[in-house]
Figure 1 (cartoon, rainbow, N blue to C red):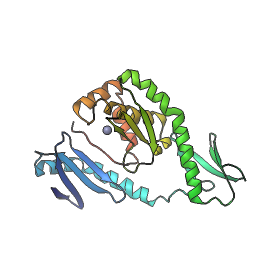
Figure 2 (tube, rainbow, N blue to C red; figure 1 turned 90 degrees about the horizontal axis):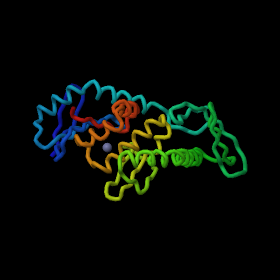
Figure 3 (cartoon, protein in one colour; figure 1 turned 90 degrees about the vertical axis):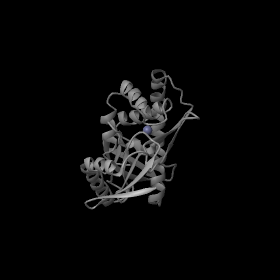
Figure 4 (tube, rainbow, N blue to C red; figure 1 turned 180 degrees about the horizontal axis):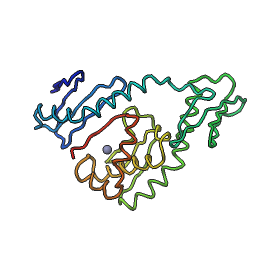
Length: 238
Ligand SMILES: [Zn+2]
């Protein structure tokens, strides 16, 4: 059953589930707010929690509005694109050859066939993003397998709308959002560690937090930085 709380102009959809922690989320594209609470949570308690997080909710909604104002990337000359947390300017070159991408301190040089449209250019950049991630993800996984004593049987890279990563606990797979290539590498590492800890503990339980805290004590900062461009947000009851 879903109930709705209204605080000022903000409507919050409240759902109760057999979970341990409160999950408050602001969803793209329109800033819809949901709160998933443990089964026994009274509505006034959920309301008090939401009120305590009102500043954060407004901030996330504001960021989404700003994001919505951003024009979609067109992969054209002098457009800015982030790689590993650094801004680069796009340069387009044309050649009758297999498309390729080159990166230096300032620029991303995309060489495409004459007439390649925005969709085609986006696809080439997406494949290039994947190749950049494939260069670094395996060594990060290898570094953390002995520390966490888990085995990742394989990882996948894909576009994900609402998450930075996910894991399949049973098959020991992890999935990573290809947008992570735009973030500093330590944030990619945080997401990988987070998903690897899920192989030990599927939910965001106290045990999960304890393991993360032990191995990756700066996880709160990393999470806050990732949520600056919110795909989704999770809040742990503290
Ligand atoms: Zn998680």
